[in-house]
Length: 401
Image 1 (cartoon, rainbow, N blue to C red):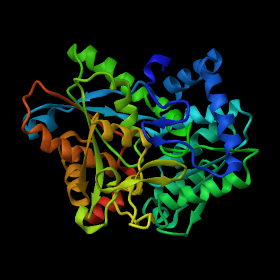
Image 2: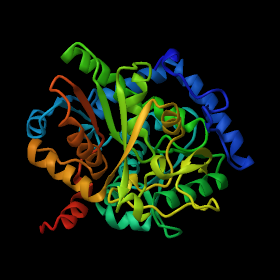
Image 3: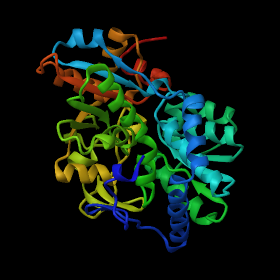
Image 4: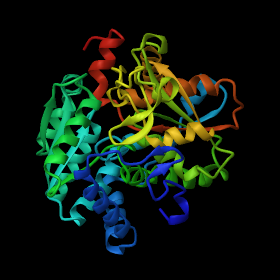
């Protein structure tokens, strides 16, 4: 990504009022070291060449932009295109960032990699990259997520990672991040924290966004090649928000292109069993950054729920918070039941089994597209495949093996 493509954050790591770095003093030197090393790699031709070569030969980029003709015909209305991040090595967009940061850790001389994971896709991606780069890998994962994403846990272990269960709090992604940060504070000199989303203290939201922006850059080129214009809508699910920012950011200055982020409404926004931070949250600080959070009147972080483990998080990236404040993106929420409808819809129309996370975006797109003319183009970021979610989805819809 060139310098002119990066509008924000500012030098302090803020997107408007959001972002920054609210961390213990022991981590400030590590964050400064990370920022300096990342700045060096941007102009390091050997680093950039290695990254781009591995994107092609290892990840399988560019991923296709697929016209979902059967889905579009079933729904009626706008033309729907799928950005097929599910076809990357490891089956999700997480590998883009894991590869970039893995190479960055190697550049910095770090030999011990720690990471958090919720849905398991980031954990698998980190374990994969660490195996390829010969780096020691430890992944923290909530006990509840370990149970509902057991196939990904097995993959991580096969790839040589140590999976450390987290039993505190809600035993999900938030608590896995807490434990990873504690580890980092204790082992900061030899350890690299490979953060998986556009959250956390500066410079992580910027670094993760830039590695994930390959999604939007490819999409822009592919839509222009196929239709000789830009899309009308970009739609992606939002938990922490890396897949959505990766799609949105390269289009930031293309004002004709509308951004829609789809959060997890869980059991319904009125139930308090959801993870819709942008829609129902308030401004606060979590995991080192200022953003919209789900919190009570005393500032205590609320327990969240989503059928999709990757969306089960009480905060969101600061750049998404900025986008909602300036009106650049619209954020909506889809319930568990609706996401399952989206899941089944894509399976039955296109022969593609999506992860439950992008199934939220599929459902919303199906409702939006109906009232739009056929010449309108909607791109959904199909951020992951559904192998990891088969047991959850089949149990929820009453399908027996």
